[in-house]
Amino acid sequence: MGAIIYKPLLYCYILLSALATGKTNFDSLERGRGGLSGSGGVFIARIERPRALNNATFHPIHVSTDNVEYNKQTGKFEVICTIFTDDFEAALAKQYHAKTDLNKAEMHAAMDALIKTYMAANLNIKADNVPVTLNYLGFEINREATDIYLESDKLPAVKKVDVETSMLYNLFDDQINIVHITVNGVRKSEKVDYPAKKVEQVF
Image (cartoon, rainbow, N blue to C red; front, side, top):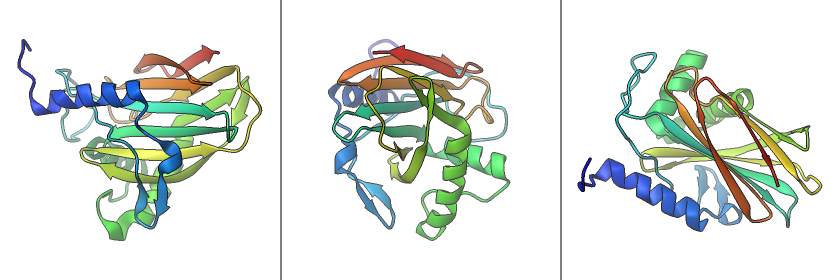
């Protein structure tokens, strides 16, 4: 790629900057009729990589991020998953044989129902070996990406976190999921390549 930085690649630098500085503030999110608003900008890079399993819009790389943070003040896990919008629409359409459009306000309620079901099937968390119930809060469009927000019930202090993710595995055989887990201000990250699903971190 040399020294040339074009717009899609720039998203990578914005993503890394946002994640490194913690600019996505879960507490400031406003839950409204059209979804959730107020998060910091989160973007995903595109780098040359092949093979989609169907005719979904082609991205040179297929990647999503799962940001899982234990909030010591509330005792809850706060989760933000970020996925390319067109990829996510294709995955939902393939899984549920339904028309999908995450940008149309009139389809927001229908998309909420599909996303809630998809997230329950493809993202699971355990805290100290105990399954965590994740409550779906909503989604919002963030330029080319969709941010999905979930929150757990109140939990005691956490030392070990297990995450199992299979986001977009029903669509791509080169999917990469980046999992960030933060407990008591300590962040640990791991890259999960299809078909692997599990991440375990001890704090």
